[in-house]
Amino acid sequence: MIKVGVIGLGAIGQRLIKNFNEHSDVTIVSVCDRVEERLQEVSTELKDVLTFSNYVQMLEEVELDLVYVAVPPKFHHQVVSDVIAKGKHVLCEKPLANSVEEAKSLYTHAKEKGILHAMNFPLNYKEGSNTFAHLIQTGYIGDVRRVELKMHFPEWPRPWQHNEWIASKEQGGFVLEVGVHYIQQIQKIFGPINVLNRSLQYSEDKAACEIGIIAQMELEDGTPIVIDGLSGIAGKEEIKFTAYGTEGTLSLLNWADLEGGKVGEPIQTIEADPSLSYSLVDHLVRAIKGEDANIIDFYAGYEAQVVLENLRN
Ligand SMILES: NC(=O)c1ccc[n+]([C@@H]2O[C@H](COP(=O)([O-])OP(=O)(O)OC[C@H]3O[C@@H](n4cnc5c(N)ncnc54)[C@H](O)[C@@H]3O)[C@@H](O)[C@H]2O)c1
Image: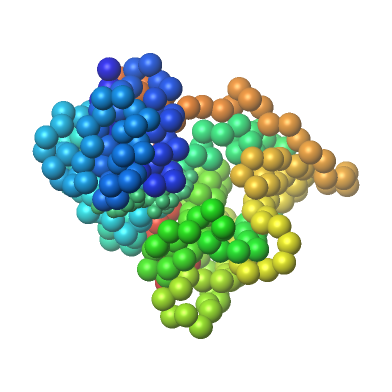
């Protein structure tokens, strides 16, 4: 049985607890949060779980195989460094850290310790995004001519997302929260990204995150990548990731839906291939057992952070 400890019981931490629980080879033995009500909420749900308000104490006192870190981004570096120092396998939420230096130090430290270092970038496990990648790799669009990422939000943060950090310039914003998922996908599917220029728009609140971004980046061969992000606008949320090629166009809409068409033909809905969906927890278990696994590691997290910080700063 793989013994898991969870640090950070917010929206995403609690979501992943359900996934860990569904796996027969995994048991959550301890959880940690600074907020007492969250500890109580989770301990009522999970039987026999140890609760801690101090993660250092949890790491000292509990025998764990894997620690899942789901605290806000600016705490990733400290918490994950302490987990690595204990020699435990670690799953970290995206983005890996809150600066390139922090991300690099986490990757280097984890590699030196020889532990499993994994990131939660869910698009790597979902059928829609994996079908998008598979269709591109098998020639659906021909040679890529342009990649575009549109992120339009009527409100940022979204109504269900209000916490103390997600609207802050320091560790929030939609470029960090949403954009980094697609930066990692572009790097995985198309290769390294070079940021050419970017223009950010802000409100009058100096501490608040961006309300708009226009960025131009390129792939190694000079293929353009365009980012268009805006919040506080009319209409519905739209996150559209599109690859235009010599033979066709393909889009991933709102994380999961696909549409595309061949040049000269209309754009139509494309069914995702369910055989291309994976379970992150299952692949973590495989990796810990030394089996082949599809893991997005801290190096991928570091590479995405380099582009992210270039866009944010
Ligand atoms: N992978 C994804 O799809 C996805 C989606 C949303 C958020 N995230 C990431 O997950 C992380 C958490 O996001 P969230 O929306 O759950 O945030 P949240 O604010 O809802 O939850 C974070 C929790 O961490 C706790 N916490 C903070 N510092 C702590 C500490 N030192 N020790 C113990 N607990 C501590 C807070 O009390 C809070 O309960 C962020 O890095 C975010 O970017 C990932």
